[in-house]
Amino acid sequence: MRFAGVRRAVLVIATIGFAALLNAQARGADDKKDPLREELLKLNSVTGDDAQLEKLRSLVKDKEKAKKLVTEAGKMLKEAKGKENPFNFNGGIMIARLAHFNKQYEVAEPFYEFLVEAATKLKSGSKMVQAYKGLIDLYWDNKKYALVSETCQKYLDDMGTEEYEQEKPFILERLVQSTAKEGKFDEALKLSDTLIELDKGGWYFIQLKGWVLREQGKLPAAIEAYTNSLEKLDANKRLKPETKDMIKDRTQYILTGLHVDNKEIDKAAKHLQALIKRNPDNPTYKNDLGFIWCDNDMNLAESEKLIKDAIDLDKKEKEKLKKEGKLDEVKANAAYLDSLGWVLFKQKKYKEALVPLKEAAADDDDGSHLEIWDHLADCHMALGQKKEAIAAWEKALKHEDLSKRDGERRRKVSEKLKKARAE
Image (cartoon, rainbow, N blue to C red):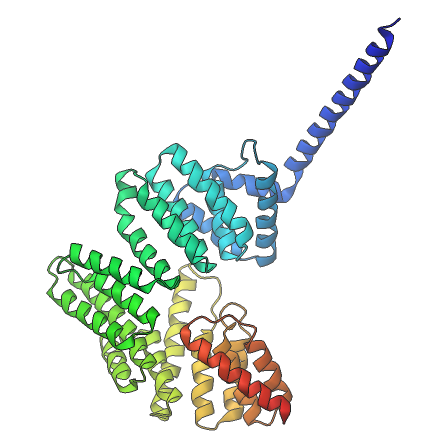
């Protein structure tokens, strides 16, 4: 009799345990029936870069669903802490990239960290490169420059396969850039000079030094560095002619921006005119030349023609891509529409200017820029629409600075907004 209570307790515990097991099995079954989780787990079987890219393209089409998928994946990863992860590398890298694209950084970060760990255990050079570069890019986009430096250093300290080792110069480049972003310019420049010395006669790391100097605000020195790299490129015998031309074009384009920052508009225009001559079907060069001229009240009629040409070229290019199945939608480039609105504004064609400026600002993907909304506000103000101008300037100030020029523009927008409210 004295064991009866014990037997009853054992029976109760066993019953509770069995019920818990049934509940756990039921929850597991529910998880399997969850359509979001089922779709996420199917990503594990998508192999190959092309197939994964195609799948990601299909996922980002539905923005709301894509965000829900990422959120659910984050929950699944948390639930798996200390247990077997429900995702393999294929599924994990796709979720990390989708989260990164959606700016759901709080989910992307633990996924990339899991991928680094998983790839390291597998000793797969290609997977380690993908995981590390993804994590580094995530930190960079999230402006966590100290973590960029730390992760780059970790990559450089580790040893790996030939593929892993071949990536180290590019990781070293990112380390120099993140060091500069941390404000450690002397350290970044010293490392750049070391790389230039090791790569005697090379052009690549001279451009890296130019990048650091630009970040530091030393524009003449940056211009000198990039100009020097062009000379080194010309002397390079190893590069294929088409590759050399492509790099030279890119370098001249960087010099264009540097000359604009240094208030040397004629020099910037000269570079762009040379680029247009070599690449007559490139819309970017035509748009940029038209914009910098009109922004500085120069050659307004010619600027308008250049910008309209850019819009037409861009449309034809996108229509071709859509026909080839590489693009889902053909829409005007927000930056080009902003340029068109601005050149019309400069010619005091305010009503005409308002149409492309409003269209540019309405672009959810590419219209979220302080400068575009500032131009729209200026146009509203010129038309006597003060209420709309104030609303546009308020919206402008909600957008992040994308360049150092935006910092100065933000100050001016704040002044204009204060003045408009006071009147």
